[in-house]
Amino acid sequence: MTSFHDLGLTGFDEALSALGWKAPTPIQMKAVPFILKGQDLIAMAQTGSGKTGAFVLPILKRLTSCAFEHQEKAAPAVLILVPTRELAKQIDDCVCALAQGQSVTTVLLIGGESGLKQSRALQKPVDIVIATPGRLLDHISRGGLTLKAIRFLVLDEADRMLDMGFLPDISKILHECNKNRQSLLFSATLSPEIDTLAQKLLKNPICVRIHANRQAEGIEEKIYRVPKSEKATFLRDLIVDNGWEQVLVFTRLKTGADKLAKHLIEDGFTVDRLHGDRTQAARSRALESFKSHAIRILVATDVAARGLDITQLPVVINFDVPVHPEDYIHRIGRTARAGLTGIAVTLVDKTEGRALEAIEKLLEKKFILETPSVYQAYFEEPIHIDEPARKPVKPKKPQKGKNSKDKGSKKPKKTIEAFDYVLPDFS
Ligand code: AMP
Image 1 (cartoon, rainbow, N blue to C red):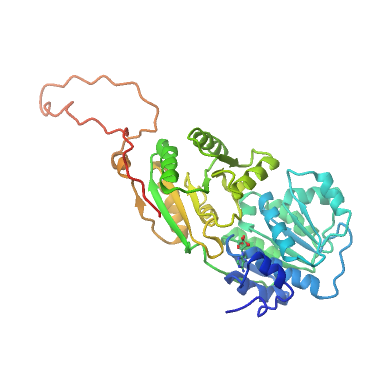
Image 2 (cartoon, protein in one colour):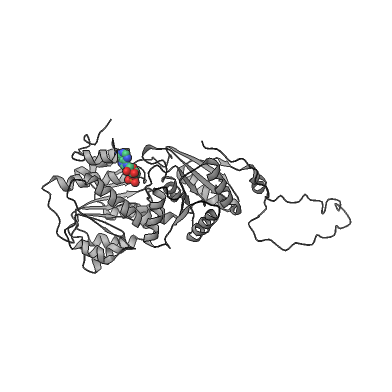
């Protein structure tokens, strides 16, 4: 088995054993040798694959191996750009844990937190800056930071940054960066836009890829057909019947997250929400309570929950089918991390068939859809119980003449009243 030493990563033994990292993950095995050699790299890897370690370890090694001198103040050697605040914090935690015992300094520049405090931190020599694009540009434009000394630039979750419209900000940041640097681009998916960005950013890059979550290794995927109006009730029963104690639920919209959380709280669950309309403090609190098991359910939107690392998260629920098929990979990748197993459940109503097909196309596989028996009638018949009740239409008097015998004798349409279905058991 390849060890961290075999990869040239010596000097991290204590930190690695404190983290419980016994051997490198596949993305670490593939990417580390090239990064140590100083090559630009594009890596296709999802969160959960150990990608953070894949760039943090070799960068720390190179930073500290040659006579290590601290950077000037406000002129970092390393810039790690990420799409969300939560991801920035996670990476900062990872850097601090791996740099244990080495006097490397980091500064986190993210929105939703005091800019003044961040400016003060930049007054001291700083080696590594971890930032979201907007806040980084704020500091640069105020003259609080220069990127002229950057030796390593990392764009993490680049596909998500482009989805979030950060391309103009990224272009400005690249313009500010030292040209003589090593650049690394990490992305879960490859698209023509990522390709264009890679051409702008990287010089003679090596491309490495792993397919861990695409094949959903260790993740049991379940797809249930459930009418939209029944989803909250179905979810409640699913959680109770399977005894799931820590459940991350994704909704497409912030309002959807609020509505579902309210519903679940009324059902007696401990719940919090993670979405962009909440303050940074509230988001951090929600995440911490979920990680420490103080609450049972966290309802999140895609952007807010992107890249979250929750150790041993057993269950992820897609309450809505994601509109962007890549989000399916990101969502279910929250479970079965670092070699563990997990369950990913998706609830699909009649209007979400297309979105599900797009995911199948991306994953190059066909899902097996299960329809709980109580909903079978709903999915078999073209009735729309989600529509507002219509005014009753007066039945027309049967016309005399041909076929008049059949008119008005149709069976009544089935509605969903009973909840006597047996829920699937994952145990
Ligand atoms: P990431 O994909 O960087 O978000 O990492 C996902 C999870 O894997 C984190 O909890 C890391 O602490 C963990 N991890 C990363 N590398 C290793 C490793 N070599 N062995 C065990 N766990 C790891």
